[in-house]
Length: 253
Image 1 (tube, rainbow, N blue to C red):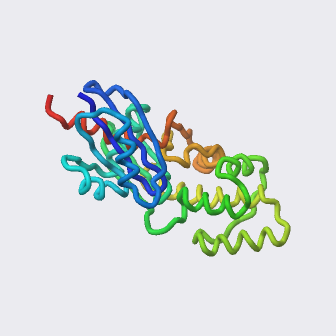
Image 2: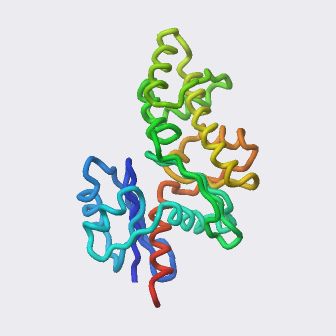
Image 3: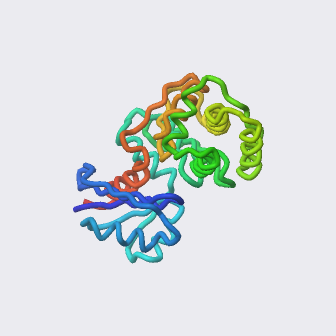
């Protein structure tokens, strides 16, 4: 049998398929767009599967649109996906487009505590995306530029609207865009570090989600917490992979 997991996020949709042994067979990804369900259907047309489990902010919509689909929380899905790559993982940070999550696991790999920021864009991939655009960087250039300087210009507001205004003022005064970039990254890292410290105080951290691809975020996070930060080979796929694995494990043989 083939088990599919689909993670419908605010910025992208990920799909993973595993076999009855939990081995990953294939992965696919697409942008969420304005209407995620047609995007999800198109993605599913590309694969063969026997059953499917959805996670992410769009999982309820998916369950309504697809008969027989099951759902799992993002917390449980990301935890299971991360454990597939890092079986000894005890702390997970997931920063996606719309929210961020800090998760602590017990010795059996089960969630024992978590914190989630889903009230606004502050501290998320969306915040970084907007700030990169304001500075004239692509999201890939943004992280690299922030690593080109050791000096950062402190950003006092984490509210996206106020931070945009602050960045505009700094640019008008001729501030170095790289230093502004580093300051913005550090503001996100401070928020993430606080969440992590409230759920787990020691050991390596597994960083999942699209923002884990940002080299400056990884560097500053490790520096801020004085802890090793591990990044899966495909950090955006952890939710979809976890959903597929949960489905496989919960399906009677």
